[in-house]
Amino acid sequence: MYNQLLPTFVCAADCGSFTKAAEKLFLSPTAVMKQLNTLEKHLDVKLMERTPAGIQLTPAGEIIYKDAKFLFDYSRKSISSAKAAMERTGHMFCVGTSLLNPAKPFMDLWYRVNQDFPDYKLHLVPFEDDHHGILFEISKLGEKFDFLLGVCDSRLWLNRCSLLPLGRYKKMCAVSREHPLAKKNCLEISDLYGQTLMMVKEGDSDTNDLIRRELTRKHPKIRIEDTPRFYDISVFNRCAETGNVLLTLECWQDVHPALVSIPVNWDYSIPYGLLYSLKPPEDVQRFVETVKKLISAPCTSE
Image 1 (cartoon, rainbow, N blue to C red):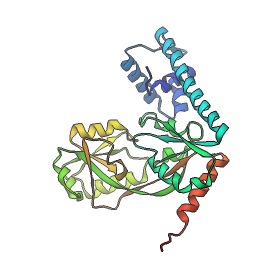
Image 2: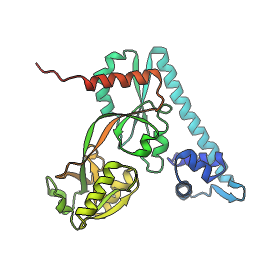
Image 3: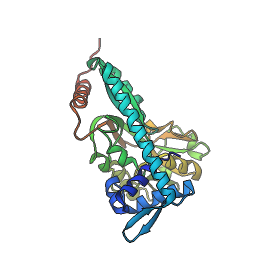
Image 4: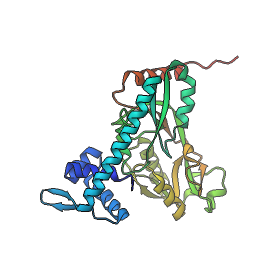
């Protein structure tokens, strides 16, 4: 039964209102309603009824609500048990991992500093790259997991977490393997003339907003199609299915097997780094300071 939209359903039921749930989930009321409609369609069950006093669960909704709460409670107890087990033998950092924000870059960083944390182990916590719920996941830094390592210049993300920049990833373009551009080793901007370029909506990313302004002003022959503000697999699927071009990143070259990512002759890039809570506990802050020293240390060569 588990579905990534269940947290939205449970939150709406607990709040008794789409508006109150939206505030808690950092979404719009319309987005909450769309998610619940999608969940009902997926389950083929009517979960809620609107009333003058708010929203009310149907009998079927009551059952799904009860079982969803059990799943959440079971998950929390599992993480709590894992942490308790680590407490008996040492300490633990929980690291989030997903398709677009995999844990491997964090692991590479960990093995460079773990000698300073001899009693610590790592516990990987998977989460979904769902453009509806990613802000909720980011807000769980410090609760669900201690760290993520990923790309970020989103104002909405940075209102909910701290970022230690580690570098930058180049902006690239992805196309289906059957696309006429797929055989090119590098693209010129003029290669995109007559194409539809998919990119995130304006207003949240300085880098993407700059790219949009410059393409619109200097290269009007490129059509721009808005994607959701945060990518998930559905965005890559649409690129593969429509034959459009997708603005992507070098770190996402292997996300979708039907797409090929191609460098572009431009200088656009986006920062990536270590994401952690706005109010980190002492050991998390100590890890961040250790990484800062590592990246600021001068390189030496024999």
